[in-house]
Image (cartoon, rainbow, N blue to C red; front, side, top):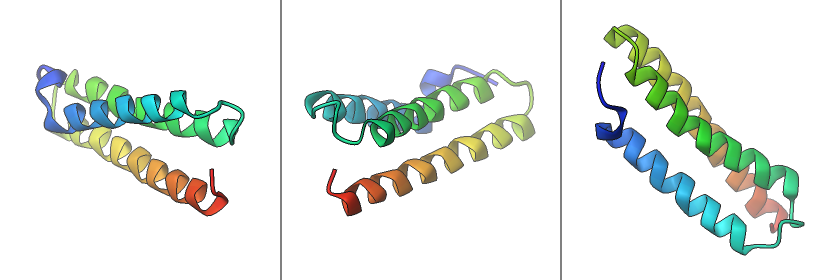
Length: 88
């Protein structure tokens, strides 16, 4: 389909991933390490899924990958809310 780096969604996902990485690197790794790792993996997954979708041949396939990335973004939102409730 095209160059994934031109996708605004990929650019925003990259910003989120970098911000989360910076935030969680500053904080002690011992604070909720499982949740921390899960959030970082999910945020990296959003970027990678969008990049993979951009490599597909049809809009239909790209849409499917975008939907997968969207569900990963919702997972991140839930995990961040979970961390807030835990005080992590």
